[in-house]
Image 1: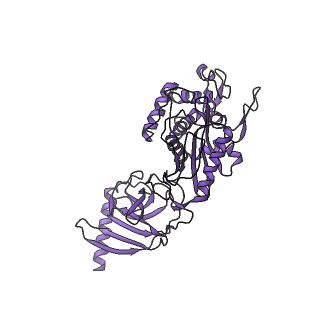
Image 2: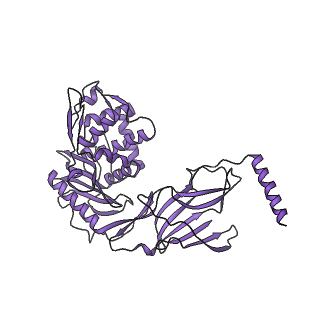
Image 3: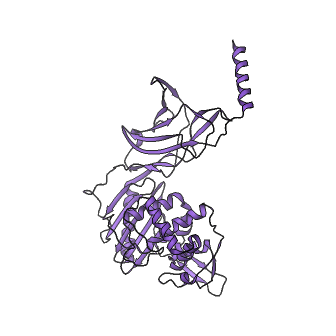
Length: 419
């Protein structure tokens, strides 16, 4: 096992410790490329950089529940009753959008697919894009209708297109909630209309919002639209204006989803980005849309005034190279499997943090580039703050017998020529 300790302030100075099977240690110093980076970590431990219940800022005073989260690390910057179960209204559609984007990524559907609205979808009340039974629309247009004006009919049409029925789609929603660790959430529909058994929490909403932004950042191409048209060239054009006014009136805001019912009152899962810092602010149970937007804006202001993100490593960036035993190639570059950033206070210096790289001395072929071969950690003294997996830059097949034989012969001749 190889362990590399890198001081972030001087990333070219690398201390490597090679631990052999007998437990003996041999130390050597290497030069590696400087690591600059951007965005998200998969396994990010919670770092206490100032927030506690006792010194929390005066935010979201009118909300029943609220949470402010760093989207990169998942760290909570502020919370208020964040685990209280409440009706989420149309914020429910964050999960629907997550499953839609997942289906697109997996190739089950595409943005150009034509979706036919069922009678069930066209009969939906509340916010809608006024689908008619058997009306056809592309997935892209339906995504726009969901993201901009929170169309319940568009959401049901997509749910049925993906899962066959809304009920089956709701099963997928609850399964994904379990996978994400959303312990206080239960969905009974895909749109968020009131039901006593349909509930979530500000914390759980932040979790699924982060998952959507982390895996499918392109969703903001839809959620940041302030106004658009559907059926522009038809006899039934529909002008869309985003229910989330912050995408126009707050600099850096580009999503994510509003919600309102009589039971839920005014809710919003919002996101904004400045420099490398992206935050998610969730409020539930606000008395009006004006107060909701004001308090979300104050949460954003707090985050951007107090914190910063510092890049550490970018997904796909080379961090080392290791020997491949009996591989078609003898060496393979080791790369980061995820983006990783640190969340710091504005006046905080990252010089105290170190990177440590854990890798085997060699790996046997075949090598699969989706299987972790080691990991990289960020540490503050003895405390591990973050960890991401390291993978091969590309897969390597096992070398053929003739190739291995040729290598042995070449090595034999080189050795004897030297002697």
